[in-house]
Image 1: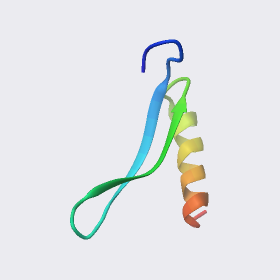
Image 2 (image 1 turned 30 degrees about the horizontal axis):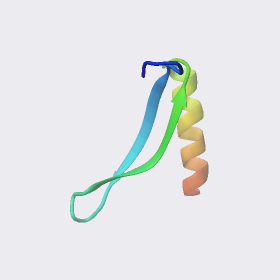
Image 3 (image 1 turned 180 degrees about the vertical axis):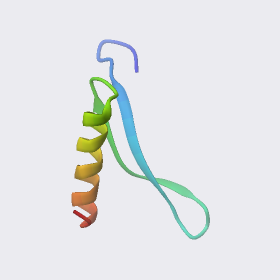
Image 4 (image 1 turned 90 degrees about the horizontal axis):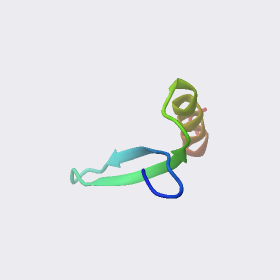
Length: 51
């Protein structure tokens, strides 16, 4: 993303029975690396009750 607040957009999406895509979660992070992905996936797992 560019502009006054640059960053990277992380998204998690789901596909329903009709093959339609819908967003499950998203986050804007400063940089794209393993630590930010681990943080994001941990939070998604907690929200979905899997962690």
